[in-house]
Image 1: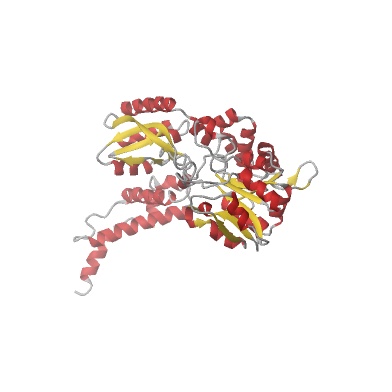
Image 2: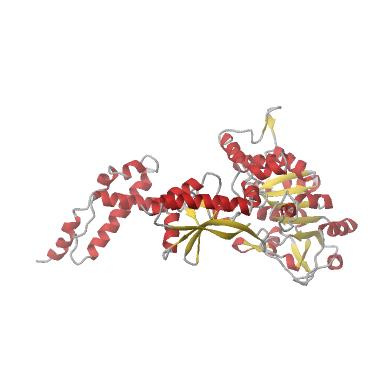
Length: 469
C-alpha cells in the first residue's frame, strides 16, 4: 500500500521521548539550575534530532532508538561542549606563561579581590572628597607616574589602541620616522604601517632591515616631520650584523630638531629582568629617564595585569591624547582599572613583593629545583591514585609567550604521561571541568608545572585519577 514503507519508518521513532520528559531526568534536571533554560532545551532538541537522524539511516529503523536517560546524557554533553566555546576557567599546563589564547597574564589574587569588590557601584568618575565628577583613571595615572617617573599617564583598552591614538594625537597629517627593521606585525595581521595610515600620519622608513643609524633619522627630517618613533621588536629578534639607535640618542636628536619622540616598548616591563638572569627588555623607567615625550606598552604582558594599553610621558603629550575625540572610544572601564590599580600597587610594595603577588612574575622566578620538587611530588600522587598510567617527571622548556623574549626559554619540569593514544588523552584532559591544557610530544602528554598555579595540582590529580575510572 502507498505510504506503508514511510509509516513503518515513522512508527518506531514515535518511541523517542519528548523534550519535556528528558528535562525531568538527571543530569538535565540539575543543569536547569545552573544554565539558561533556553540553552538546555536547545541541547535536548539537538540530541533528539541526532537520534532521529541516526535511526532513519539504519536498515531496520527504530532498532537502536535511545531511551530518555541516554538522550539526557547526550544533551548534557552537547551543552557542555557549547559552553566550552565561551569563556571558562582553564588550567594552563602548556608552559607558555603569557598564552594569548588563554588570556595572557593571569590576574593576581589582589587584583581579583579588587575586581570583585568593585563589581558593583564604584567611584569610577566621582571625586569622593568633593562629590564632583573626577577623572576615571586619575589614581592609576598617579601610580604609573610614581612607578616610572613620568609626568602623567592614561590608559586605553590595549597597546594597539595606544599606538593608534598616540600617532593620531601627535602626528596626524605629518610624517613619522621609523626604522625599517621596526615595522612590526603582531597577532591578527596588525601591522604598524597600516596603523599609521589609519591614524592620519605618513610613514617615513629609514635604515635597512638590520641596521639603522642616528644619521639616518637626521637626514630624513623635513618640515613635514611630526614625530620620531622607536618600536621595540618584542616578538622577533634580528641577530648578527645589526645596529640600532638607543632611545637616549634618539631623544637628543628630537630635542635638537624640536621634534617629539615616541617609544613603543611593547611588553611593558617595569622590572630590570637581567637581574633575574633573563634577556634585557626595555623598561618604562629607562624611556622616561631618557626623556621620551610619550611611551606606550601593554598591561597584560610582562607587567602582569589586565589587558590594557598604557601611555605615559609629558603632561602636554598625555593631554593631547585625552583631548583626541578617539580617546572616548578606547578608554577603559572599572573592570580594567580595578585589577590594573591592584597590580600597580603590588609593584609599589617593592620588587620582592610584586614577584610573589603577581602570577606572571612568580612563574618567571620559579627555579628549576623548585619545579622539579613539585613535579616529583605530583607524579608520585598520580602514580598512587592511577597505577595504570605510565607517569614520570621530565625536564621541559617553558616560554614567556605573546612575543616577549622570543629567543629565550626557561628550564622547567613537568609531568609526562606516556601512552600510544596521547592525542586522545590530551583531548580527555581538555574535556575535564575545568579543562586542562597540556602539550603532546613524542607519544607523551606533558604538563609543565611552571604555569600551573598554586592549588591547581589537586585538580590535575583528580582529572588523572578519573582517566582510569
